[in-house]
Image (cartoon, rainbow, N blue to C red; front, side, top):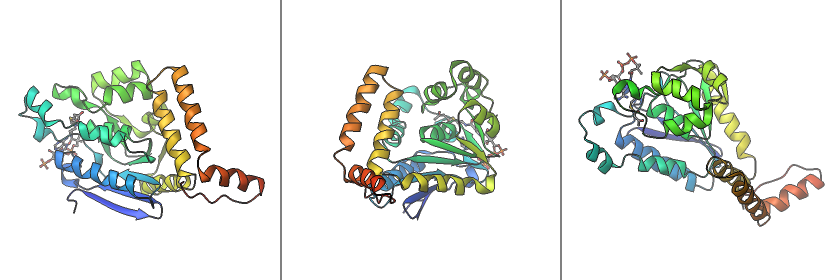
Amino acid sequence: MSTYIQREDRGAVSVVRICREKQLNALNLALMDELVATLEACDADDSIRAIVLTGGEKAFAAGADIAEMADQTAIGMKKLGQFRVWDRIRGITKPLIAAVTGYALGGGCELAMTCDLIIAGQSARFGQPEVKLGVMPGAGGTQWLTRAVGKARALELLWTGDPVTADEAYRLGLVNRVVPDARCLEEAVALAQRIAERPPVAVQMIKEAVYQALDTTLQDGMEAERNLFYLLFATEDQREGMRAFMEKRPPEFKGR
Ligand code: CAA
């Protein structure tokens, strides 16, 4: 039983919703534990091929829970190990799409950026306001932002702590597309369903290769890609995909 997280499956797509609306979905420790447990359950479920993560109308998430951190010490924070769950979210192998309306601030922005793709409603506001609290991002904000929008724009966002609109976030390359709020979740689910029609093993290996690209030299990335490519010839879906093309019929992918 989850207090803060709801999961609803729509065919091969799980919609995971953060429900702590009164606190604008502030990400307390219990909520993050429930979130990662739910995402991992979706990842382990063979009937699920993609996941959409969403929040409420007013907030996707307004950040880590400030009340939980206000009286902490450096060692206390380190002992809490609150970021271990974030590494587990990065370990999700299936496509993870954020559908963001309202505030995505601090840890909320980091959570959206930890997802693979972001669909933003017009009301979405992205920002890393930690500097205004006397700290800095701790769940990957400096790393994701720099990779997504480049050094100078990342530094401006991180130093000022001021949020950007959905349209600005799109111009910066932070989000995949901007849609009216009322269509945000549906667009994200439709995209997830389109990806879910593709062969799941290939989809997961593409994810693995793309994250490797953020983390390695071009030569090492090329080699990793090549090996994953070869490995896909061990799947039934490779046979099915290529045969279906030659037989001029739609493929039926099984995920093996
Ligand atoms: N932590 C804890 N509670 C929060 C919260 C947060 N990050 N954000 C909002 N809330 C709570 C408020 O305390 C308030 O609770 P009460 O009704 O009990 O007082 C409730 O949510 C509604 O918030 P507001 O009254 O402030 O709503 P608003 O519409 O006036 O303002 C807002 C909205 C601009 C998003 C404002 O709430 C805000 O600035 N929130 C904090 C944003 C922030 O600084 N996030 C970064 C957190 S640090 C972090 O995330 C570190 C990291 O890298 C992991």
